[in-house]
Image (cartoon, rainbow, N blue to C red; front, side, top):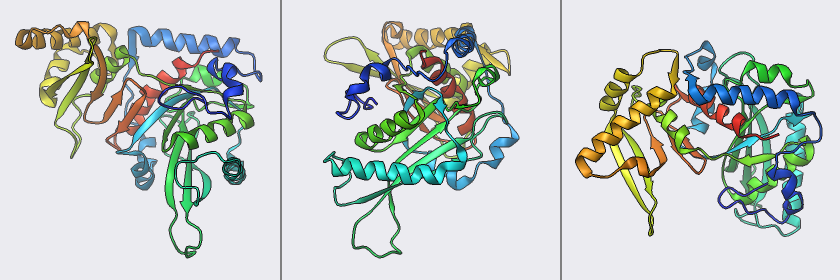
Length: 346
């Protein structure tokens, strides 16, 4: 599995580099799943549906939601998992804990202290669904406890990762064999060494492969259009767009727009309550570019959009996100799940 920052493989996973980089799995014929994925990708090129509030959002436990908010998550896309079973999560917890201990015995640096005992725990996030057919999200937490501490001492969470498939297209779920579980989006917060160990364990046990999920400048413009202007208590009062200028040394331009002004402009352009079109997104940014040029004589169209911070989410092109609102968590995940599915290459 690739490390999050530079794509360098760990020594343990280097031998499987070619298979991982191509997302290849030998367990199933790719044809029908590839066709369904391509249909989804083509739809997203010209227009995207706006996920609506559903009763399922109300079932998300506030304590579980708090685990996911206000943290920076690094994104991966994941191929379907073979013979993954929700009834064996306790067994998986023991096996992954043993795998981590074995890697420590081999001298692999875990980066959280070699004296710590590390334990993995699998659990479900039952409320993290956009619709009934969505696969059940899975949370993995790795905790540490120094030796010779009291039994009542609370373990410290040193790594968190979770799989989800919010608002997954029905045609993808229909063509997938029953022996596979489609959780295409993986997010983690913690050390790169533990991430590589967890990824290697999943690859070996479920014949799935991970690929770093970058967010293109075009997709960041979609995210800005779809998720700016929402009234969220205690959230940022402005939308920030960060552009990278193609010069040396590297320079970034931060473009901050008051949320109400952004919303007013978007409402003048956007016509439908159910979907957003590419033409609308392009028109929105052309207006922003023209306004910026009038004031600063800089053509932002010649730069690259690398980060968007709105009232409900912050996202960076390097595949890093921070969720800022429980009320919109599931709907934003639907957008990122779509990106993860389109990122998988069979």
